[in-house]
Amino acid sequence: MKKWGWLIGGLILALIVFSMFLPGTSVTRSSRQVNCTNEALTRWTVNPANWKSWWPGQVLNDSTIQYENKQYRIEIILLNGFKALREDRSERIEFQFVPQVGDSSELILTRTRANGWNPILRIYRWAEKQLNPNSSDPLLDKLSTFFDSPEKVYGFAIKRDKVIHVSWMSGKRVYDHEPSSEETAALLTALRSYIENQQGVIQADPILNVRSLGEKSFELMVAYPTDRNLQPNAEFAVKNMIPGFLMVGEVRGGPKTIQLAEQNLDLYMRDHKLQSPAIPFQTLITDRSKITDTAQWITRLNYPVFN
Image 1 (cartoon, helix red, strand yellow):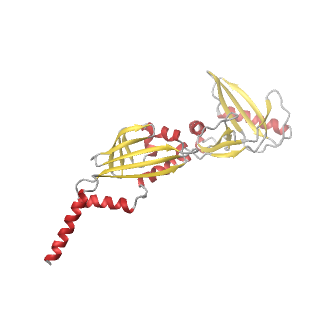
Image 2 (tube, rainbow, N blue to C red):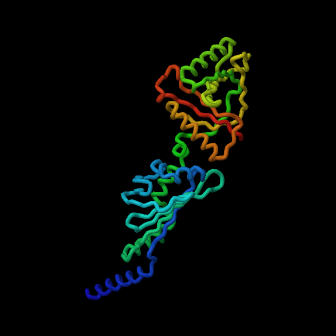
Image 3 (tube, helix red, strand yellow):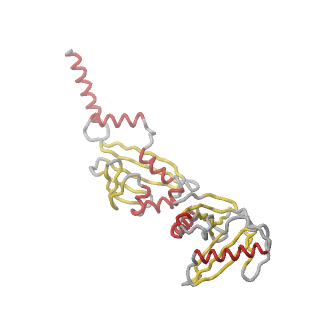
């Protein structure tokens, strides 16, 4: 029995001595590639006001975040990430992103933890690193879930599509105010009647574009795709689209929702360095003259792009 006691004691002493030669800190590094541009990542991370949208824990204030009931103080926000120190100073996390080929980026999360003088903790973390050198980090997994989704980054799903309809009949009117839904509906009704009077066939939902011509001057343009080019007049004109490509996305909601989505689609174009041969426009999936509840409006946003 005494022999076993000496053996166990010797083993414990050996472990203590071994732990003293292990590093006082343990460093783990995880990485993940995501379908997100460096520009979009920078926009989300440099402004603390945006953090509540993508940080997987709580954002307590501009300099304090929480994850799994542990608080971290943000030490510095960089153009490609941030550094944060745990409240009890036992751990530092460093998040970085690096641009990759194409429109993707690599997310890198580095954790530096103080092992303290506890020999068991030191040996445990050393063994954990040896046995699982390529293990993923749950925090990085959650960050990747956000930044790998264009729907989360830009607020709605965006995809590349083709121009289907070539022949269009359009109408324009200029107002000293931003055109209302009623004024838009009136112009669409007049345009639809003109097409029908020429025995034209409307092929799909109408499109809309409103642009500012200056202070208190707005141009409203609407158009319907037709089965062929029709005869124009002083009020309505023929428009032919180039059978190219579009970046498109659908949103549900009223004018403010649509305006925000248009801004985000414009950011998508800039982030992905896409160039456009024509102005963007809306497709009115919902007949706004019949459905007055703007929360129920469905609008497809279209942005023409070169190949």
